[in-house]
Length: 566
Image (cartoon, rainbow, N blue to C red; front, top):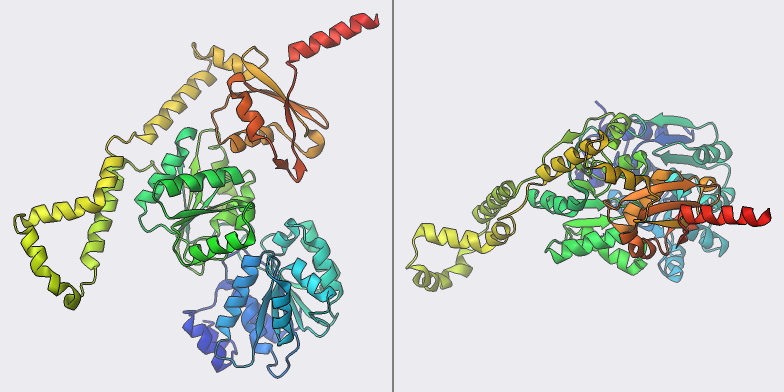
């Protein structure tokens, strides 16, 4: 069996590896590390996040650094500031017992002068985001003419975030003699282009099925009424008292809303989204890494590059629009061989996505009932009792107060004392869940109504008529995106649901044209639509929504115009 001890690392590097708790290499480390040591090939590594890629490229790079040479010998490029910093910290931890190795992270959003001074002091390894690295090269503050190794980590994410020109600019200025290691979860056309243009006959290493979910992650979904989504989230948190979780939402508005509600309900939570300044983002991430936060609520874009170990739960507050994104979300838990849980809160309109995702990740979801109030109270009670049983008692500190305590409580029996101390901590759960509704029953009732309507049951014909739209109870809206923007009806439905944070809005007819579209929504939601769809974008294009004429009015005008022409 291959171990770190048999891989050819120096004693001081092995000491750092051992102190970090590493025992046996992960599959990608088993394949990549010997290849780096034994060959001079460029390498393409295809693997999901959380598989141990940083150590796979970082450990052999450290081993091959000439500590007597202060020039830049290795450059590691990553898509986000957070991942750049995390890689730098990991490399510093690996090499903590090796004197003379200097790792410097450089990234946007921080003073460039400070980073320039750090580079001038000497750096054999630079970890960088592409934009800041190219800026430093242009300022002649970073010299990469003698580098031996370039690593492109999460190359697909860097390209998704628009760093193509920066990567081209950096790679063009690097020596042809360098070795390039490219790591990516997927191999889209743009990643293949970089491999073809800047790599020399690379060896391709694939670990696991592309997009497949990690074996040590349990996948669960709860079926709820759309309006009960937040209540279900609270119950998931309450039934897991030790949760250290990442909650994914689709939009910035929803992220803020969910985090605010969690905070108001007494949870240690915060939000991570695009409206935060870099200083605010750093503060939130610091609290999350220190586990001051129990739950971090984030959008997919804001969560890119987050590399935090020991996340116990990933919660999909909404399933993502693209099923492949679920794999990236769930991969935030169950890292480094540890187990994790990925949860989806699903309503009936999203339920059909579950088998699609199961096929993609090659794993089955467990459908579980939403925890009841009684189940949560039981779980919280046992947690409280365990906490009380395991609390450390400092006899020297507490003894001087015991006479007062005993005198104060002597009128109470042992059973009464226990009841009072438990109630002191536990009453809020008892009060909150005293009359808690059965969310599973509500979801089933909703399903029964939908089934009856879909089968044409009497009493629901009005609903069916309204969903076809075009009557007096609907407002018709104009939206400035259409077929040429790649829009299909579900995109507009998703835009309405996500930005209004209301999945029960009755949506009527959707008419897609080449460069714009029309959609109809119940008249009572008119102001909500105009307010919620203001200042949003679709694939980078600013979206404009206005009230349009109803179809009947529009047809009358057309007919009237034709009569005048005659």
